[in-house]
Amino acid sequence: QVQLVESGGGLVQAGGSLRLSCAASGRTFSSYRMGWFRQAPGKEREFVAGISWSGGSTYYARSVKGRFTISRDNAKNTVYLQMNSLKPDDTAVYYCARLSPEGSPLGSWGQGTQVTVSS
Image (cartoon, rainbow, N blue to C red; front, side, top):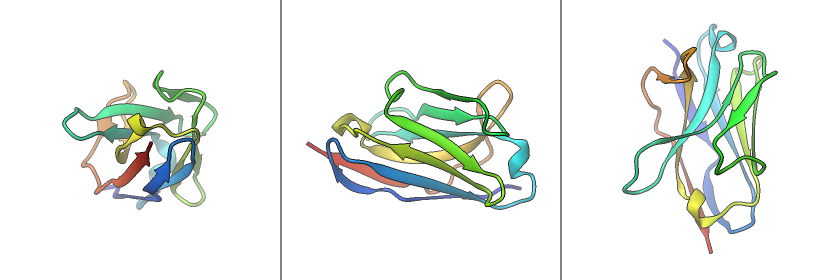
């Protein structure tokens, strides 16, 4: 069972940056694709970014492409999300998850980390 703990959220002004971290327990972390999702108030959870097990392949939602960068450090069992040029629409609780081969989230959600972007 892999447990995921997100951190790094906070309050930032529009145009600012934040770096989120997701620490995973378990020896199988490097075997999985990983992804970030977010859920804004009153909205469904949505995919943000994904990364292959090696880190060699990344993919993004259209709304964040060019502004967000996903990366991972398998030696530290950690996946990151660097968020630049933040907008008020990026305000949400951010979650990380293991991904199935089809890109669907696997396992239980962690507590997430709140990102609030003020205008």
